[in-house]
Length: 314
Image 1 (cartoon, helix red, strand yellow):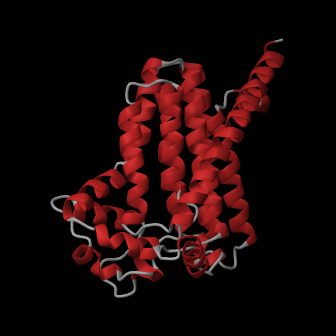
Image 2: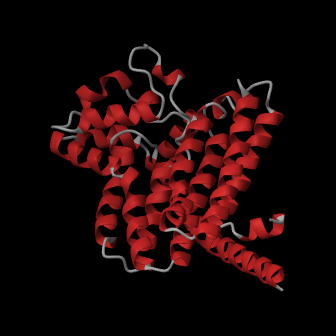
């Protein structure tokens, strides 16, 4: 199969994922003196690119529901994989944390530190509700994707998936630019959070799962040195807004569930001390930019791929 024909089979999500993997591979090469096992990361990224091309080709050749589904849904796994890859790259490449700057901006805007100010409203029931809402972040995309996949043509799913994937990658660029650990480490005592913000049933377990996902050790006295630098901009805010917007764009049955959980989630990012408010403001602006530019970029790629297929067929 000719390379142009193979490229024409790529969805918008394939296209943007391949470019981002190439970008990360280039960063590893440039900063190979700082990133441990940079060559392993680069090889894994190149292997992932090969897998993407293979899935696109198999889905087109075999046309089975399983392969078509794998080709469309792998994207949700790859953004999580890349998130963990960033753990090995962001701090070694940019070892300066910008928490002091983010704290100063919040204080300049509000005259207080918002996470400390919100502590006066703390209540176990409220904490439980908001922790559940925050944890639901990992399921909002599945709720959105399943309904779009079942109700609409595959092109609509590709458009929605592209915005979500593109949004993730843009937020990842922010982590490289402004690494930070968040107020639970800087303005509060991380080890005391279960005492200061107790929940009822699920809060502690959910916190632990989130901590594991962010590579926070439970047995060491200095977890701040290990936590992932993923605060600015707030990807939780950005991607939640994008998900809610898509729910209403497609008039999904689940749009009100997405809206309720999403708004609670955004409040939870500050109440639960994961983010500064400036992170949320940046995440909101990035959500707008993602939708505005992403719609144009996805439409451009769809047209480009169609033109490639047309040239090949003639």
